[in-house]
Length: 354
Image (cartoon, rainbow, N blue to C red):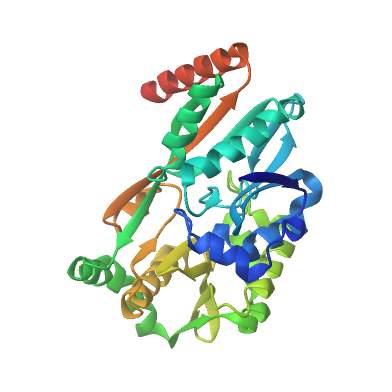
């Protein structure tokens, strides 16, 4: 018999850290953003800005699914159910093992039972290949809820396993080698890849370099907000014994030239938050860092180097595959649903004209 329970903290779900991570590892979407370390750090730092909802699904053998969610109010007071970590997690999904349809049905039914507590369910950044997209769509259609699915982000990736020759060609591109050669001709260039507690002393410098990189732009650094700095520090501490956080530093003349806060998890290297010294901007220090990370992924025989969400132009030059994420919006009434459909249609028209 399947049962569901709503908890308001990851620590009351009934799974310890290792059991949670085992469930995440057995799920279709198994990225760093589904781990206990990620979720618990996010809840610890940002949990007071929302209402965390963890819907757990249990059978006689134990927990077979978890929906890591939160309720946030929009500008007009609209209550939105979203994946926990929205805005920080590049990939989101439900954690399930076994009969995925039955687990997702149980999660959806638990949400539908408390429909008076939310206005819309907005599930963002689901990998397009996840069965969640079609299964949730079918559940909603069967139960009379309105659902709108749309492509959200493109996610460039450098596939390495089975594409080693192509990966090496990208690593040895003249444009990448030329940038590195410039610095090597003008002073000592060193590369460091750090995990665990060794990362902590570098973080303040990383934050300041990132702030300087984006000053005066239309996208000021997230590290202008102390809460974001606290989150990145807490995440580094929580993952210290796992080796999942990979902090890479390129040093020129003994000083940090470019830095990267990323992840090495489940056979994939993840591009997450880079920075570089703006005084060397015309010599593209970010490309020196990028070449190092591609080389790291090849040397360590990682399955891929995932550039995650966003198809910034530079990524297409160094990747060989394109994934997508999908957003699902679930509405209780046809009025809100039709308004959202009209909004998306208008945005599509505007995008086509731009």
